[in-house]
Image (cartoon, rainbow, N blue to C red; front, side):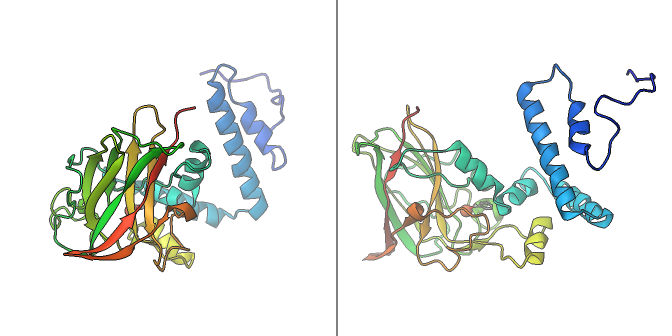
Length: 290
Ligand code: BEZ
Ligand code: FE
């Protein structure tokens, strides 16, 4: 470690309320990664502006540090409270939007969420993904298309949803069968897909930690409107991470993670076909890599 013993003030002067951003950012070394320097300098600028603008009190600063500490402490392999914080502050959706700008007509992205599990069973087209026998059966069907309306063959569609009680299988490992309401389907030359799941139900995000408390203090509910999750991938096309939403859901206009997009609200119509009570048609349109 070296220290300046010259007794001279640094080029930017000593730290004051008025020059804090310049003084802190002047310490970034000359040989550091350029993007890291840009990101951190901007973060410091906005953090300091934030503290100045609201005249952050010492108590509020301590409260914030305590909140972030508890957010970290509750994190496990299964529970990622920082992502939940990012989701509920709208940051996840903003980052998703910045990184997934697509041409008109391509299906829009939305938030991945914490409940996707790699390695779900590849199922035959039309197969049932619901293994616990609960809920209103729903036939999901449609096509995977390119922007010109041509079918995409070999598209891999990874789907997952909550069960009729509003929980994902991974939230109830001792109650629900493994891979309940999950499956992977691969399209043939006609681009069609179909599977039988349930008409999803709305559910609260995990709200027994600091993020749930924050929502409560802000007068916000923790609910997500009913949705089916999809990851659609095909060679030569941009990966699509999305949901379809049930249009008459009471939480459609107040999704706690801001994931709803108008184009992702899908039709859910009565089917009355044996035990299948609902039917939801939705085509996914993939954009090629630019
Ligand atoms: C989900 O839809 O699974 C989800 C998304 C963000 C936070 C919590 C859950
Ligand atoms: Fe979900």
